[in-house]
Image (cartoon, rainbow, N blue to C red):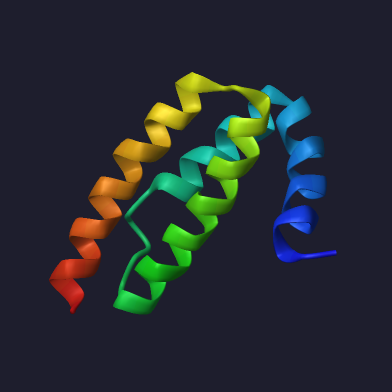
Length: 81
């Protein structure tokens, strides 16, 4: 089982509880705890996995939010590099 498959299994449980998913999503897209280029890359990797999961669910609302968050985090990454 690869990393994306493990992530999807975990996310299925979280996604089924909309409140929990909103909390997880909010913490993931927050740039408050980004303090280095490595943290930016880690967060972008997590967003990529969540994006793949949400594409399977056809959740356009959160996919749009992910794209916005990725733009912000990529700007943070450039600032750290």
